[in-house]
Length: 188
Length: 314
Ligand code: SF4
Ligand code: SF4
Image 1 (cartoon, each protein chain N blue to C red):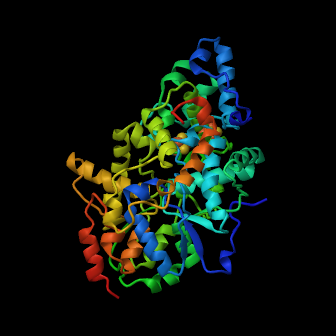
Image 2: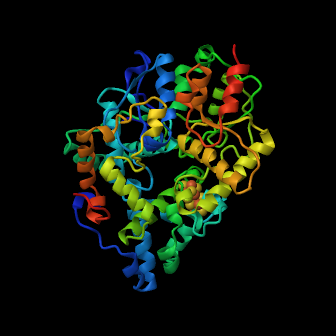
Image 3: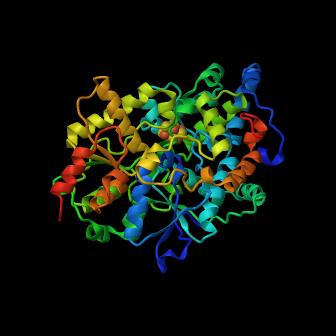
């Protein structure tokens, strides 16, 4: 199941896939979403419980949990290709908690991100976060240390930021994950 | 098989000890929250370990958006830093709490993931056994220390103050992955009781469990994020006329602190409610220097801190 382990980048490219026959697209997209972590996708009965409490639905994003699942199940190509809603998901898991069919809609949002990543369809901020994670061990990182000094803490926190060996450990880990296979960021 | 709620360490018999997991936002944005934890826990008899070499949890927009194994591997390395010392981690950030515990849940549930993770960890000479987990400061204060001890430990009480609590999403759901769970995760009471233990009122309000709107939502569409936060702030103003917002999560705290300032400048709200993390509020009540434990904010805190220190002396 795990791509990182096999070391073979999968043949997944949503753009290419969209050029295929509708039936094939439909089938393949569901398959990929399941493979990328949303194991119970097919159990969805479109009851809308997840949508009723989703912050994305409430704030007017187009393809929130229930609708995204529908779009996947019926293979709506343009919608799936262009929409950035999955990247707005706050990972709150209200939907997971409330779903009567154990679909874990959050995992569908996440799987959709993972599929989009294969197409390099990810926000610039996400790439920056990944780069920062690799370079500093912190996705959110600041060079300025006024705040730490102001409250009487050492400028360097006891994290990868002050520990070269720990940072190398993290880099070794990251180099052995799918992140390295995808080549999204430079990893020397 | 280790379960989510099982206690790893021999904390029960020994002196309480936790690995202080900092994450990114507390470390760089709001180190006053770190300082508050470094003050209150030793004073309450809890020993803290620095978990030297810890990293980002990892947060949602990074490894979790790539694949499960990579996510779990980064989380497992952090968890190992506690496990190797026989202690659990402890955090004041809901994202760290959720990312670490969801990763642990995936590893416990799926031996394939656990094996792949340990193959990667072997390259740095580590192994995660699934024992160490991440506890939430809110739960440690509530369960391990207890309301009675908190009441005894404070120098200033909050009598007469009304607090709007913000437990935050990742404190509650998915309840299945967490070591500690509210009886009803859609009607959380723990943070309310913690505030009441300090003498304040912390009533229910209609939007108590609403999302603050930070994180991916804010970075994708700030307008929608601010609108969501505004709804909740207005509810807090109208229903409770709260003196203070108290969050259990550093990110929620940042959002409400920050957004109020933006909304005020745009003329969209005309009130200002100070926002604190619970550990900061407790630190102030215990008599620690507010400059150190609550010195960083956008929405002013001076008045409320003054009121606590002048009005609430026991
Ligand atoms: S709550 Fe579950 S079953 Fe209902 S629409 Fe959402 S994912 Fe489908
Ligand atoms: S996890 Fe994402 S999809 Fe689910 S309710 Fe929260 S924001 Fe909506």
